[in-house]
Image (cartoon, rainbow, N blue to C red):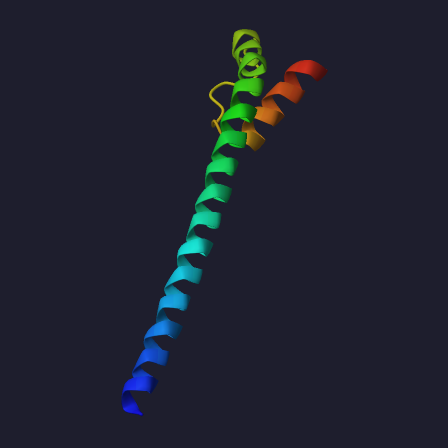
Length: 78
């Protein structure tokens, strides 16, 4: 009887490890997707940032997306 319980415990733990591995893979995929979107957004905003710097509107803005966006909006409004 103890051997049967041990087999059940091993099976349950193996299932838990499998589930955790699957969740980890999903989270990694989500992280990589977010990183790709960030790169795409920075690439899209880069030309506007360069225009801002050339016009002297944005002294030395951070490269965060909100900073870039503010800089570009300021350049387009000015």
